[in-house]
Image (cartoon, rainbow, N blue to C red; front, side):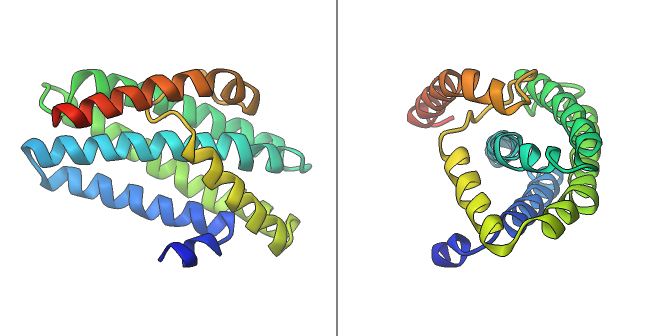
Length: 185
């Protein structure tokens, strides 16, 4: 499986992650207790690293295109809004009153965002980048995800902000993840 994923281009990689995000939202509607907390934690991590990769690798490439600037500006606004909502949900926890209402809003926003990327941003990439470039972008996206923060950080939506603020945030996030794992939470 890893070999297959190593050969996928950036569009395939991100679409696969969008499918995984959809599945995690679906699981959250069915699960309770520890399973729900774990699924929510996985969703937070996936959304966080996924958006970092898009902000560092995909958006800058699309922004260079004539039609790309407007598309990227809209995606960045959506990402900031989702990060703020995700941060609120993370602070609340899945057991809190009102969590499901806000989770529903997050789901709606994130799935609309993914749809916009798939309909607007990915076609721009596909028509302006050759296969080799798309494969290189996937490798760069996987590398960015490997060192990305695992929690949302609203206001960090540009390549520059991610490069400056991402590493310290990632260290703190990953330390918290390790502690959470050691405590069995």
